[in-house]
Length: 591
Image 1 (tube, rainbow, N blue to C red):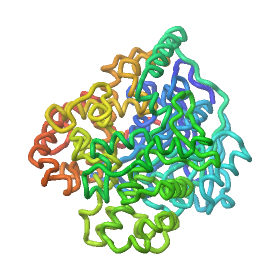
Image 2 (tube, rainbow, N blue to C red; image 1 turned 135 degrees about the vertical axis):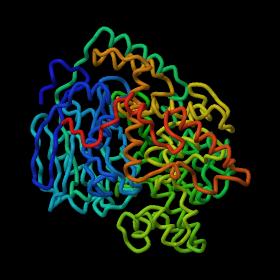
Image 3 (cartoon, rainbow, N blue to C red; image 1 turned 120 degrees about the vertical axis):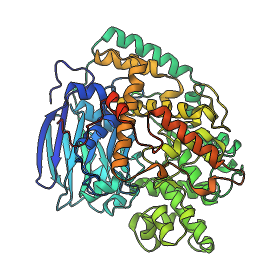
Image 4 (tube, rainbow, N blue to C red; image 1 turned 90 degrees about the vertical axis):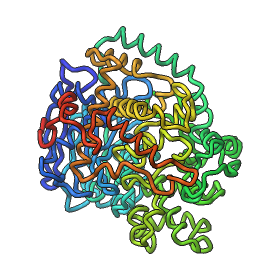
């Protein structure tokens, strides 16, 4: 595929694969769409909404929705940009969902000349898609079906080279929190996008690309890149990530009593010495390997000398203290099983913790002593694993114990107790994809002190800050940039990079407005799907009794709506949608 001669950063190419008919067709992205939605998350959201008609509810159910794979105008070009995004309707929550993955797969797709791949329909038999520069094919995957991630990846890279994104057995069996995995260990997680891929009988996407994208202003690009590298190298937070990986958060989060304990029942510091970054570094001092994504010097992922993935912070929190577990080896085993089956460790760990709370007596039989066996049962949907494979909300509802599911909009909360970081609490409640920390990583200003430290124990002044962080996060996910880059860079640096690469002048205000546009369109999708203000809340256990004051939270939510230009019912005002250019996006196909 040949990039458009008048576009830089974007290739302008969309490929649409209809698995019902086995057809492949090529389209172009209008330049105004590229400019207004960038790529990655934003472009995927714009495409998905264009495929939904204007009836009161989306025509797609929670498994048969289109699956959209996108990269951004900066993917594979600037530092910390080796990422891609999948966008669909979540089979776990019913919300719109996007998931950004790292590694090298996104850069390979960009080098193959694509900005987006749209997959619709369902194959009668297992298939995989192969993209080799301009050559695209749908291939039989019968021999791959039933295999897990590592084996599938090895077989396909051995046959074709390039990079592989695939599902394991959990995706095949439509576990509602199944991931799409790439480069063996990188997850596009949260929300069950792997189940959508499995329902389509699509086992994998194999990509090889040799066409490196150019930039509009090479001199300015070099100047901006040099400044960015200076800021990245000077960041203490990134130095910590480079040295210890994300487990560097374990002691910090535990110190502030934000670590989830026993399904978020307790808000306290716990003994984390044997799962801390320092312990991990000493335990594997003779054989720990660092893994980097494309164009990233941080290299925050780790594995043992034998190739076993070392858990990241979220996994440690959810399979550790949240499951009342202090055995790091069991956490490591649970993480390895989740990655090979292709399952979200946050939702899986939280669902296990929910199960433990409901069935207090299970600890002697299928509790922590059998944690890895329970995780495998979920991946196989065997026994109790079949019930748990639907996520904590569905499981708790079948047991008439809905309060034991720690979720927002059906998505399980990650490893930060919202009672101790109230901006993060509001960010959880208003997140478009549910209980997610990355939609507005308020842990950065409230705990880490990036870009500056703010009082974590108050909601005063937080609604506007949360909205701005949400807008910036949406823009970053659309460029597509690593979230950790924000520990060193601001909207100004991102817009400078975007301008140099594309040749289109973007200010920091333009970038934030783009994020706002994307956020509002996602909100409209969720309203279209039946979500209301009542869903912008937290589990009951976080309110009262020394937790969050419900009246204060409700007032902050109203202030958040006003800041966004929404009514008190949480519905964006017509003037706001018109101002952002998203008033009539449903059913308006542009590809």
